[in-house]
Length: 430
Ligand code: SAH
Ligand code: SF4
Image (cartoon, rainbow, N blue to C red; front, side):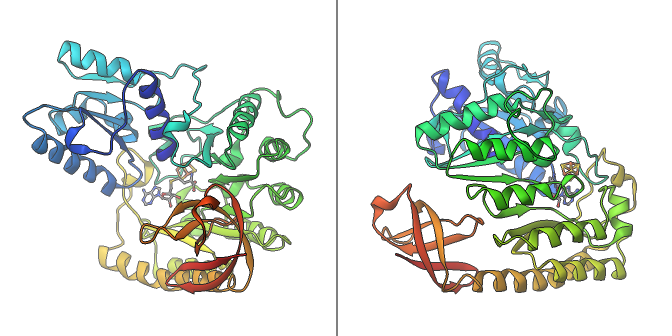
């Protein structure tokens, strides 16, 4: 989501005549796009602002903060990090150039946390995309779930689904422009619930999201990936849609957070272990070998050794193809922040090591199972180490490195997987 937001802001500013630069030393404006999901990211922001202030004290570059920390902290940011020129909330990014101009003209910090203009056009300019072949397509913003540990509903506001007709038109434009893969993105894509049916009338499906998936598949764009899915709203029909349409990629990211019913309840996730397992069984029964990834939180308040054992058991059962895990980080303003953070840092660390062992084992098994198989890889770039080595993603979002001619870039190549070394796949183009 954050990369997508940065792309949008770069597009807005480019249209106003600003230029994006990699050369920090010559930049006139620094804009920090922030995340507040865990405390560590917030700390990093203040360190980076201090660095820029030190390195650019003479020529006085402008500094702005956008994203979740901006939305949550607003004016207090100016006190915590003096020298900030503008603060733009998650709903106000469309007005960023106004804030920059006002800050420069009035020589006074500007803060805009206001409401977003509903009809704003969020298409991203080709120049600002992270890849010339892959594009992010936001379909739902915000979150209504209020899991007890999570700051997102406070920093991003309530769920708002974008109209399907607008999404489909954008995807058709991207296809005409040569984009080969789209990623439908949102905090919980499968909670998609637009106000009207426009764009979905001709597509059957059990939920608006599975209808949207079928409608996007019908645009004929070559590959469609989507992330993140919320377990409670993960209808089996999503798997049926993947089975029916080759261009819906065989990858599902379904964060489980914990394998203990007691902890899931305290997290207010709205699902228990049984219904999560049922979803996994449906995914695993697909003839398309759907790759399954997840997020887990270690050391939520009150997590006992038994609760953690349950998480380990569930991880073994699910055989995740890949997973992210995070130590619980108390976020001020969330209900869990009122609970005692009673799992000691040492225990959190030990549990992370144990979980990592299981997760690595299943990731390794999943990668090794690819050896000898032919996979379709969207060739996205050259390796940083050699200009003969290309890399790209498979349909199930695994990265593959392989030797091949540079004119393959942007094409979908058949690659035979020959080797799996320290969690990376290597192959040969055929
Ligand atoms: N909407 C998605 C995930 C959004 S945040 C979902 O419901 O799964 C991305 C991940 O950050 C979460 O899946 C969770 O694992 C992690 N996370 C969120 N808040 C956290 C906290 N307070 N401490 C540690 N990890 C957290
Ligand atoms: Fe946070 Fe839960 Fe919403 Fe995901 S679903 S963004 S974890 S509140």
